[in-house]
Length: 503
Image (cartoon, rainbow, N blue to C red; front, top):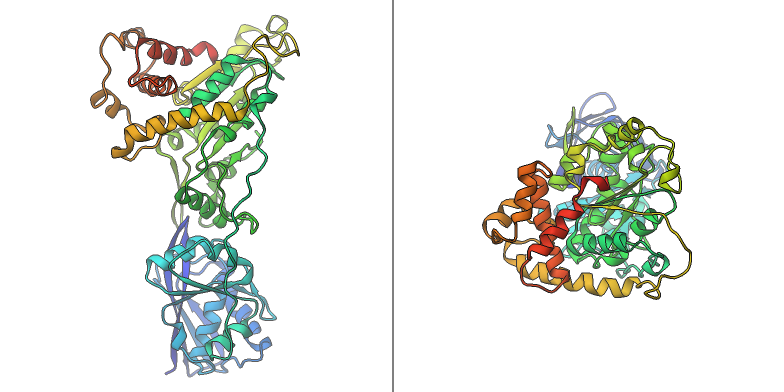
């Protein structure tokens, strides 16, 4: 009974699982049966692959073919198994030798004429193959740029099934990946464009230095969006590991660009307020795809006109802000996507939002209802809140030309270096990542420094979570001031940033 095996990869979120594909050619009526929890797209593979094999000049078995995908209890989604199925059948029928299949992963969809088409998630699939000890991978030529990102595994590309068949027979070599292309630094908007708003500029600098979330409230046209778009320019470039994490998410989403496979600049994602919950946090039929929050991983998620997003969308972010990941349960399994981002919100103070607050025609109840769309539990997770005022003149302020991004970025990087050095033994990079118990127990401040914070807790002005966030902000302010530890002034300034009147 002819039997052959090939290997591919199933993706559960961004995690790859190795899949063994067995092709059994037995006696019986001609036909093809596919087993192993395939989805609708994969069930069609038997017809797609049969046509591709015949149109590539190879013979499809004229007896019964059984294709088994193991582990059988693992959901198989998509068309990325086509190439491995075709090769397994050809090996079982004796058309090609199976020697090179051992230790090789095959990824790609087959067109009816035998072309190998690109599929999503090649990068995480290659990482899974490397972890599993596989030494070779065959991918579509269009996906070779993803293979260049993975060391420790030999990656080759094919344009057609005939090329893979010839390679298995030893008649030719496949296309190797080209050199890795590093992303050229994109043009990031400069802070020098923002006139005035010294408090908001300072809040943006503190947010960048400590990795804190930020809320900006003010009338339209005062610079909330301008400031938010300039935050990525203040952040340090992504490390190799962080850049690879970002690229993995975009590979699964299908939005990874061949020209910029490895992104060094923190991503900036600003969804429209009409976005659905599934598009925001992730979702879709079958196993969920990543949403906007995962595309903002290691970068900035900006919600402009935050009060217009609606309670369901905003409240879906509460757990994500605490845990840095999102878990989405579906009937076929649970997927987990990374979502550790800086959260920036901008909102008007009321529905009518006139240029000057004195011209507001909203009733107190209307203003209260509008701002109550940003719930207390959500705002409690936002570290910095700043109230922006209307511009009174278009001329440069008395202090001279506003500071450019480069000047502010130097201070931010120095503050981040101080924080990273302090938390190095614990594995934290920024003050925003430090758990509250560690701050209170291992890095406790003297009672005279936290007296104002204790008074706020006693009066109910802040919650226990808010007090922890105040301590994190105080440490960031101390880092910016090049102080060893926060003092009472730093704690007072941090508490001012938590003022609910800024929301």
